[in-house]
Length: 598
Ligand code: GLU
Image (cartoon, rainbow, N blue to C red; front, side, top):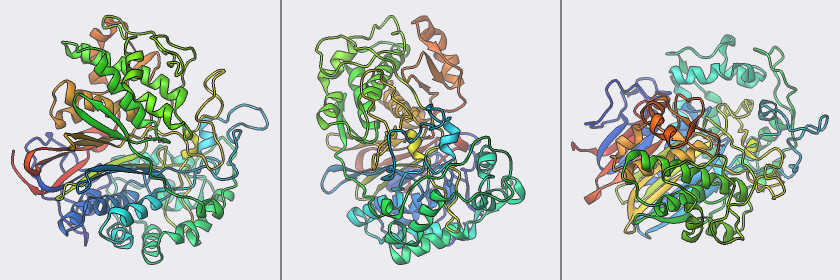
């Protein structure tokens, strides 16, 4: 491996998929990576070989899972800059082996003080902005939470300084990494948006074109930003020079004098100030907890809807009987998912009261929803949300919107002491709001478009309207599953609202259908988010479509890929299976400290 400070991967892969590709964004000289690794002493799984190698190096040198997760995430900010970075936010879930507890950090972006319920309503027309118009603007940029998350995690649970953990990533940014097809395509898909901004064009559109596959991508500005933070601490970002540059970018988007491509919308500034950054705090909400077939499932609480939606759906699945066929299991999975999404859309937002959240993941609520599932017939979609105040098996009224997303990244880390991190981080859409902060080398998020632009719940209140300081509802679902109080499985994925169904389906595949973790990782996916048609990968549609259609399910147009998960399963005597995608998103990279043959 050519990069100093980033160890070579040494991984044994009995189950490596034939022809597994080099991971996305691979560094110069990066060794071939593998999607599955077995062994001991700690494990790392990310979408990217360089990030996995950085995490593994930290573990090998005595760092713990939190140290390794922060170091790997910082590298993802370099090699996966369109999905993650210090311009964004995320959710960090941590199992502390000594205490036997699961804790979380909510590092979600927040609306600035200037945000109002009408921020995404065009004052000229009184109608919501078109999504792309809202996205590529200052209006969509939330106060970033990612750096505060790393800082908080390192201080609370880490054994290294934040500065030390940023150094491997600074080196990758300085020396560069080899552009692969995914990186190239992500820029190509954003050419017109990136091309509107001088800073973004300079970094990602050399000569007006996306960086060529095989070329070396460097980001000296980001290297310098990481080093500056390493020297001066996170305050330089939240209270100092970097924060000032973020506010200036949102208030005065760095428009290119000679744009690349065309953009059909005005590019609106917004009023995000240094005081918004200075006022940002991570939160430490208790994880959501639900029981599923003797396992304890810990997920992320609000402002993510991931924990409650996955927990509620698992409860419904458990209460809806035990089918004797794979199609029966999948039917119940799809129905439970639709019911859970209806309730999420109605009730879950940043300010949902705790009693409501608790109710949604309660057995009694699941009973009220599970009774609607007919094993022989699919419910008409969309299903209405349940009435939180009513008793009995009586649905309320109103429909449900569904939002999509393609960006985001996820990582899973475990150390030799048994600590586990499951971390999902994002800048929302691929490429965020398309504005690189000039001179700083990172993209800003467009997370605030995860708010509903206008009320969606008819006469009922919408829990996810914008507001000052409010955090938009997320679907990110970093999940740690315990068995008898000890880690059994940790998993998570990107994919907008399909994150919830990807995590749910992997749990169903692993626990209900008895697949191994690598099989559950590779299995074709389908997502029923309470819409008329199921969105499925082609292999799922062709394999199960006829039987599910016979039950009354409808399919929307297929999608090539759902999710890009990472996971670790824990066996006896410290054994670990680290798993990443064998194919999706150009394949991921799993590694263990001490490889073993199975
Ligand atoms: N912004 C999305 C969320 O928080 C994630 C985006 C994605 O995964 O595409 O749910």
